[in-house]
Image (cartoon, rainbow, N blue to C red; front, top):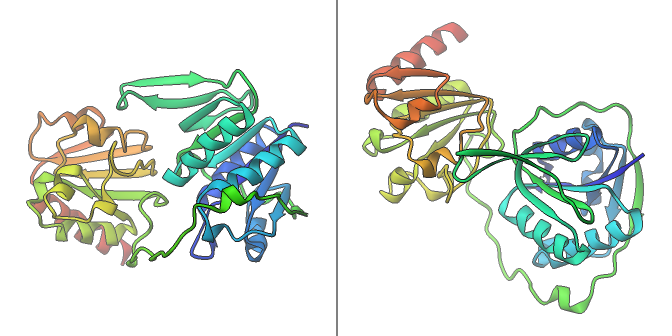
Length: 312
């Protein structure tokens, strides 16, 4: 059976849902080996379709740049000869994947929206204008996958565990983390992890109250277009787009967003897209599964009230 390595993604002491998504794709390829650097998280991995957990000791990766992680994965690729290494397509994940591809003389595919049992990955490229299916032709397939691209499979059994102590060179420890500050979070889901995202754009005129209230009644994350963040109306950490965050939720609601290619590149792989815009010629309607031509300040309060009433 083919071996597949997945890199466990964890935030604030919790295994991210994206790890389960990686495991789901890996399960269709072969035996799923989850590479973990924090032994205290082992029990959380039991919820996903993981066959084996490789607990990497001897190094606190929070103190260093990505180099120790890359060296660890390089040694595991050498010892286990996996068919593929799957990593979440975050900024850090893509850095690790790129360095790992160089270290192992392997091909790399980034920002894939899926990968099949034959290791053929699907990507949406050129600002979302083209869909490509491709495969790595040399070495181990190093692939980063977008979050929310698949629903994680549940556990099929209790994973086995093994310990691995990597050899980390002094040069890998030269890049150190001198300080860090956690992102201030509210009660809403993390943007890249959320199954529902409600975003506001130029049409909000800087007033995101209706957008936030609608998001809260849906249990959704709040996003924003570049125009809104550049104007200072919403934090840049919530920007969805080519120069912001890429999201692929089950439902994406675009409110007062015209649909510039920069924004479309960050959300058009969403499973269902609902558009609210008073301009019937707005390009964003080309992507919409459902569209409402109207002022968001009239539409959203009515939608919020209707959903609240139905919940009650």
